[in-house]
Amino acid sequence: VSYEEYAAARLAGLLRYAHMLTGDPHLAGDIVQETMIQVQLKWRLVNRAESPDQYVRRMLTRAYLNWRRTSWLRRTVLSAEPVEPPPAPDHVEASAERDRMWALLGTLPRRQRAAVVLRYYEDLRDEEIAEVLGCAVGTVRAHISRAMATLRATLTPAPAAPSPTVPTHAGGGRE
Amino acid sequence: VSIEEQLRATFREQEQHVPRPELLAPRIDRGARRLRRRRTRQRMALAAVALLALVGAVPEVLHHWPRSERSTSAAGLPEPAPVAVPAGAIDLLLVITDTPDGATRPELATATVIRIPAGHSGAFLVSVDRDQSVATADDPGATLASAYQSGGGEQLGAETAGLLGLRGFTLTISLSYTGVQLLVDAVGDVRFCIDHTMVSSRLTSMDPDPVTGVVSPGKVGYAAGCNSYPGADVVDLLRERVQIDKAVDVKAAADKNTRDFLIALLGRLNQQNSKQLGLLGTVVAPELTVQPKPLAAWDWWGLAALAGGIQGLQYPARAADADALRSALATDTLAQYLAAHPG
Image (cartoon, rainbow over all chains, first blue to last red; front, side, top):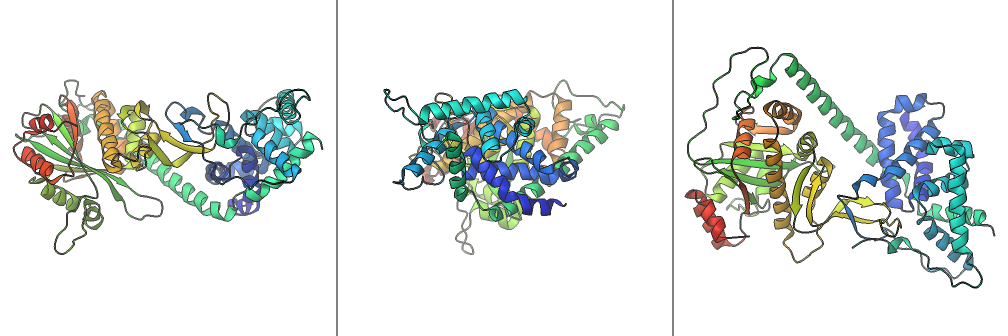
């Protein structure tokens, strides 16, 4: 398989995966771009891997986990502006729930979010997720368990307690 | 509906917001080509360094360096006579060039005049707005940037000298942004201050907010204040023409950022020993052109860096102030000009 054939077949899937990881289409594009540049430059190495797909997914996940992590000291988020406006309010309750879920995913630590996306979007087994994240299977299960507990606690509040405020993507930036 | 089912439904719904791959594929190809070119240049530079070190030529490249710790030739070659430094004031033109995506030729990013006054006891960096008019009857819309586009460093030098009332430049040094990045990364981070918060139009962030932990896709920038910047950030910052405070002249702010960076960089270069400078010169050589004599450039950089106290100023927008600056340049009295025109 040549790089061009691989990219033609897999680019759309990688973009979908990156979008679920990052929660932002432009950032997803940036991360996939950086990853695929490396894939193109190291194609012979990637193609020799047992599963090129899994290899690239690991590269992309690592790019997501490390993205700009070292840059906080020098750069600062000036304003939180989602690149695309959020969809118009949906009066259907299920849709509102999905919006809340999407916003909540944005509050999860990166590794937890990656583990959740790999299991519930990419449908990988725990062993495969561990390989992608570079950790033990037990750690994967812990990540997913904690993430699900967070989601569950926020989406199903205790009956007597007031509803907690759901942080949104647009609310966390620093001026 | 279970949380797991809600998650799957959420992911399915989000698929409609995924960007189209056909828009990304050309960006990937361009990025890979650019990275390949950069790696080739770096390999060539490293090979050149290795070759120079092998034949003991590094000290030869540096034999003019005006420092007490000047290297001697490892190969025992005789020391050539040092370059004769002209008496009186010396003017150098430092040009930083940019080749944006899709452009086939470099464009003028910033033009800075380095004046080393007679006595060579200091240096002044004068930023000249790249959009400064140098109109003639034949070309009423001519600017310094268009002069560079049409005639390269030579024409830019002639136009800049004409604008400032100078006879010409002893050397015109052109350095690309790639060269700036290589240079900064080679000396380590460069610390300088910016007066106004600048927004990056090229970067975004997805780091969690340190306080709330919320990941917020948003604009990234460089906050006003003093910081140590690595090469990539220096280039991103210097290229930027967007800032938060709209009341401030953005061109002047960008020129001042470049000027303050250059002063800081010269300071960093001054901390290197002659051997390190020789290696730097070799690494950055593919991104550097010097007219009329290539090797002597490092002597002049050294001279500027050694000069005690470097001060920066902007070629003024007001005609009366511009006349005063031209007069100060002509009479070599920039110190007095600066005292009379603070800020």
